[in-house]
Amino acid sequence: MSLWNVADYMRWRTGGDDPVLEELARRYTLDGARVLDLGCGPGHAAAALAERHGAVVMGLDASSEMLAAAREVAPTVTLVQGAAEDMPFEDGSFDIVLSNFVVHLLDRPAAFAEVHRVLGKGGIYWIKTQDPETIRSYWAAPLFPSVVGIETARFPSESRLRDELVAAGFRDVHVERRVLERVFGRDEAIEKLASGAYSTLQLLPPVELADGIRRAPHVLSDPVRYRLVYLMVEARR
Image (cartoon, rainbow, N blue to C red; front, side):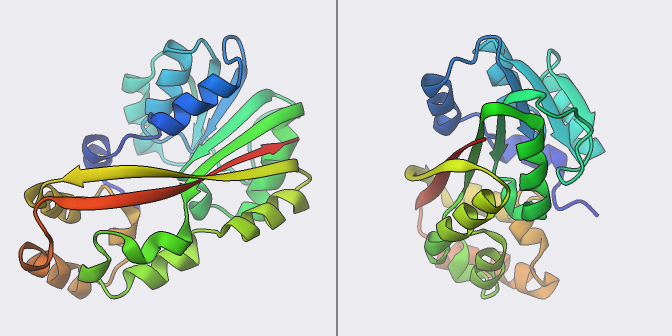
């Protein structure tokens, strides 16, 4: 069973086309670069890399539903269904691999070894993921008692990411934090909670999810203000 409803994901999520992606474009020459969007989802980031920055982009995702959406969003991108832990690509196929909010879903030791294999010498692995140390401040955490435990178990810490990447053969692992300020109305927040856009919510006990949504109008402020803290990781092969 999928952890997302693709239509809801398309409505509420950026899919990685955001300031962190633009920072990647500022740091590296993407025009003509061979780029793999690992866990491309509905293709927003892949389309941006190809259409705005001239990269030669391949998108890989395990979900046929996400790839169906990506074919509409990113028609110039080559899309492949497959697992991050066993990628159907030759050694050294890419100059850059990026993972936008994906690594918490993977068997990371196996996936990182595969990323190392498919990158050319000197290639870059670029990761964006949530800082688990800040999950307690997640705007929906007061509604759902299980959220903090679920998310801190899923999202790797900075030290764990470093260790796993080094174990996979990467060098020059550099981690930075970025903060994204978000403000949205309470009604919009409640719509998000009732949607299938967030895998976290699909992992909650159904009774807990229903109770949190019921209490949301009384617990959430209006507007909801939230600081999302990213770990932005750059590792070189």
